[in-house]
Image 1 (cartoon, one colour):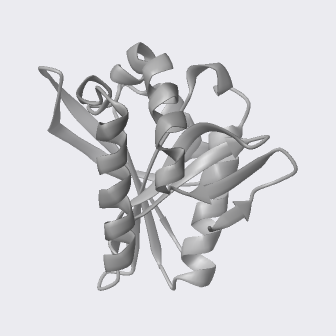
Image 2 (cartoon, helix red, strand yellow):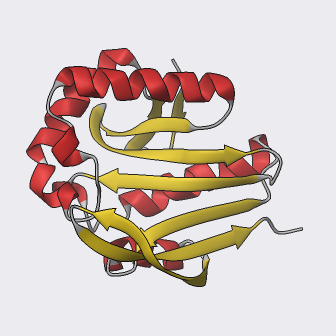
Image 3 (cartoon, helix red, strand yellow):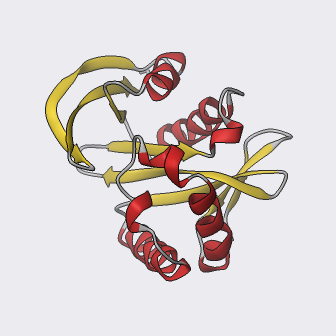
Length: 177
């Protein structure tokens, strides 16, 4: 099983079936909080839904189209981070992430993203990182700014989130040459 140490407190772990129940419990506990910005929480009704997500994630990793990792603090799952899309032809990855509410505001997502960005640039030959966040999601947008990503634009009417049409802010970072 793949594990990547972030620092003395945190590590990334490849999302695998043994994490299904723990992940479901984390989603369930944070359902209301996560639903504000993410489409999947209301659709995640059972551990079987999480198992199916993990199955798709593992398959996507095998196809080279995504990489989904759990964020662990002291061996306890506290969120997810992923390369939602990997494009080898464009040498670009799109990062997505979420963190349990109780772990917000401690720089955890910054550290996790920084680790994933280094992996993409140094191990995968990626030349561009992209992160999309709801334009009103100030916490996610702050992570992008702290990471040094540049706001490339706002895409209007980008997502239907629980019946509300929202805009996305698109941030990018090119590998230094």
